[in-house]
Length: 142
Image 1 (cartoon, rainbow, N blue to C red):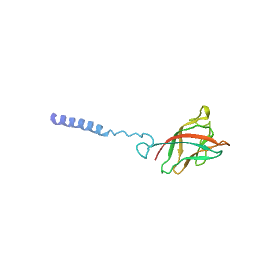
Image 2 (image 1 turned 30 degrees about the vertical axis):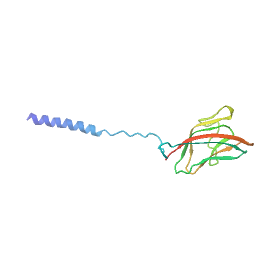
Image 3 (image 1 turned 90 degrees about the vertical axis):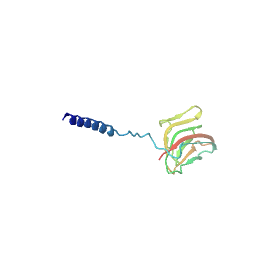
Image 4 (image 1 turned 30 degrees about the horizontal axis):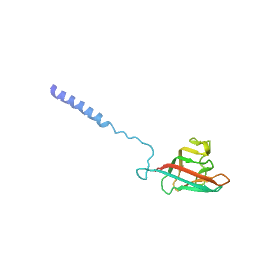
């Protein structure tokens, strides 16, 4: 009589251990924004132009269906203001990540959104003609 009771006891223990092991679910973690457009979705743009007072130069137009996130821009002159669709999204000297360096050079590190269909440009906010050199870096999301 003891034999079948021991067998049922062992079976119950094995069933319990198997149930506990099967109840563990694999962990899935979200690793941040999903990026697209190839294995290296980072894009950068750079140029240098001589611009008249109040003139604008287009850096790029976001023709994709995804937003473009600017993570850094560097401009060699404080009078070259960054604009998205003709509006300045950065209130100079009040924006986290904005830095005015010596010699009029400006640096921005942060996140600046350029929605799908929008145009990123630099505008000469000085009254006279100026030389504007820039570098912009970012990535596409979806």
